[in-house]
Length: 429
Image (cartoon, rainbow, N blue to C red; front, side, top):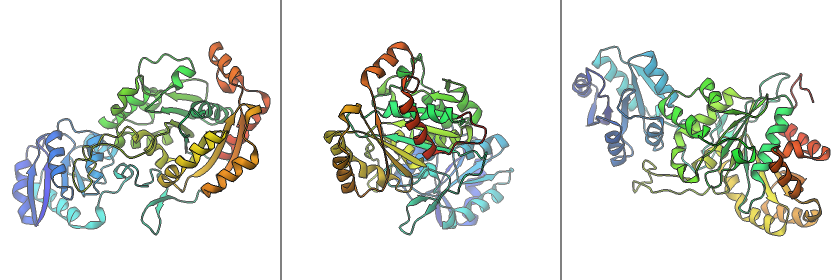
């Protein structure tokens, strides 16, 4: 007999499902009436399969993602097209239609839960910090962790659908400035670009571009993902337009609101953003360590809260990672200490190292190259000199760093952008 948690209080024939279970070798060990009850039952046994309907009170994509993070079998029960769309938006891997016949529905559930090939392992079930890839085009390595499939050469005029994570070690290496400048250069090259502020420690993108920060677009998108209503149209509506081709999804208005950015919702945001824009550039914080309270001795993340979820999920989903570091001995030392944690999250993504600093203070090439060799990295290294006074004037004058950049710096940024996404046909540059 197979034990199953059943959460379908909205189905009028739910007692019939319970009665029919024993006919197919299933024991309904727990009948959950709402999302809180379902979460408690799932935390009590991290291996038990779950059958859940879309109408469970207070059910959300985040809760579904937490349940699936244990790689248990989850079956969604839909009675309408809307139910099916919501369950699939929550990344439930097995969705079945209930047509009012409890015996037939239980028979289908029994087939799914008795077969190990339907265990829940979508992107939304990948654990933080365990190296699971978030991109849709991922394969399995011999060791079992997700890897990005080799990218095919883009066809002329084809949408790239690229997600770029911009990370840097502690010490203000210029992550946000780099993310904004690269995003503007990509937009200048003809792509539709979405720039996301996913820094949960010091969000500053909206302030840097001089926009009003009354609400967080990223929080709105995550709430819609939780409700199963996030799609390309609603995501675009949550952004703010900076230019014809560049949209900004604002970050947290206050850093202490980081619990609003839930792991499963973030994974859905990254997936939908790929559908809505050619290139998605995500500015993330420096901290990517796994943290949070673990609810179960076996390591279940059901009740965990992770402040670093935004950074880690973006890195997992990234096709390309831009690593920014100060071109100084201290900056490179911090990079040496912290970068291995980044590559352990997603070692299949393309990697470009951007060294920043005032033109007269750039670390000697021999020193920086020697320190980079200690990391064992074979990554492109781009040196971007920056004038701090000009950046300050740009913010004071209400223009972006890209608009204030010199012609030489723009050429360097354009070359960096082309390394991420080739210039499409019909571009004005």
